[in-house]
Image (tube, rainbow, N blue to C red; front, side, top):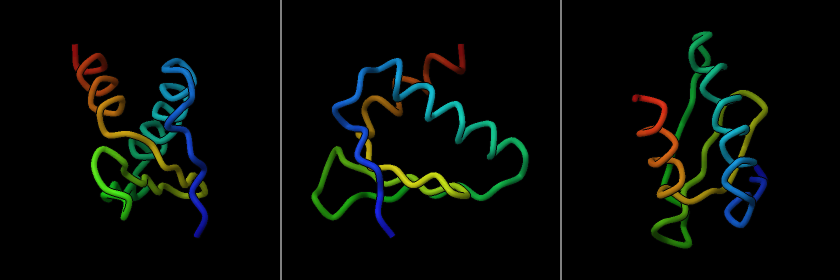
Length: 68
């Protein structure tokens, strides 16, 4: 499975993708986050037809902002 690399995308673009995944997750869809073989901080996220390679730091920052 090929993952779209969004690590260098602007934060706002990453957040749009994270929101799409979160919306699917809230609908009961399975979401999986896994450390990428290239090492920290890269992770892969798979949910339905969304397959991305991103950095865990921006993902954690988005989640912290969302929880507020």
